[in-house]
Length: 262
Length: 255
Image (tube, rainbow over the protein chains, first blue to last red):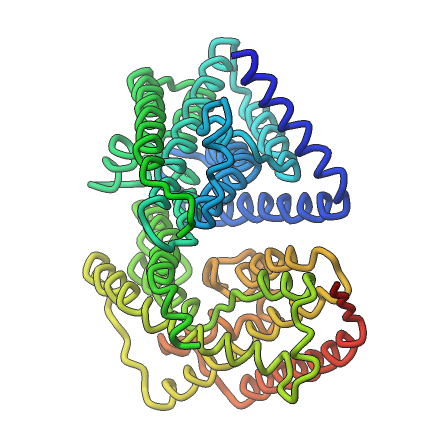
């Protein structure tokens, strides 16, 4: 375990050195990232203020939800996307072998190797807006609520990353599908809005079958003083199941790998 | 080019699905908003869904996505042979982009049509049949919208000759286009200050105006036509100017 922990931080250090090499690029992309963050707040703020807004959610409450989305989004672009992009590219180019021959779990390296830092600002903007609206609404948030929010946030991130890994692993089975990595970012809009927005079958799908809708709704509800322990437990179990499924699928798929590229 | 693009048919179908997915979610959001009121800014729920369905079609017909890899091509010094041929780099870029666009339309149209028909049925949308004059105007606007988007993308590519990270400008392009063209939300729904900016820029001819003409909500006159033509002429001149300067900035060394 200690070895894995050391490798994890070693890669963070390497990525930091890489970033320092292209400082101009770092600041440029940081600005782009902040622009998208501002755009997201503005766009949904605009829709949420039309008519009487979204039933059951005030504007301030929705801003809390968008803040959780923003923080998850920071992880998406800082960790999930660069790693999955490298992973699928290596499968298609036949370069994954270098991971498979190392005396370490290949899936560990695949999931943690890459990271970027310019999207970290996005995380802090989300956190700042979250704190601002929590204070504005004079919500009483105790240690238990903070702990619950952190647990849900981690479970949501694991669920997302596992589903992404699962989809990216399909790259072993197809000859050419370069945009396979765009599927999960395409699904981001599911957790950009409260899950209550989805009705009928779609609501059931995004709450129970692929519980992406819970990722931002549940922590927002905890902050707003409404704890649905049943759904929180369901999200945690879903995240664990998704993680096990994605790793099993990877191990099954890797047997098919011929190292000659697709 | 046709055969080369054909290799990407699976990707095109995935891209088409990814194109419609955010709108699918958006329809639910608007559904929630309209659950409490019937009409906002003269749009009812079916009207707003109809608006976004037309946005999807225009987006598929006019959007360009070559900035990233073309900027990379220039940065890596891979355009030498275009500079010595009697066929300019811009012509090559345009012909490839156009061929790719036609194939992309061919493969994505079935997906979009299914999405359109399903939503027309679900939201009980009363479809509009535009008059012949409106159809001609819409074709003119779609072609202009494509030309506008192509040239903005071309500028980003050409800026690569000066800026190291110009591919990031692609994101700036999407934000500006989404905000001011009416792709994000009908202009009537925007706050006053944003409406003023959107209405004064030519980007409104990319989404908002063609859709309004299609729906019979906008009287397109000669002033509009002249504005579009003047914009295109300006953009062509600026592109040529940029290209003429950019060629002399290009350095490539082999070895």
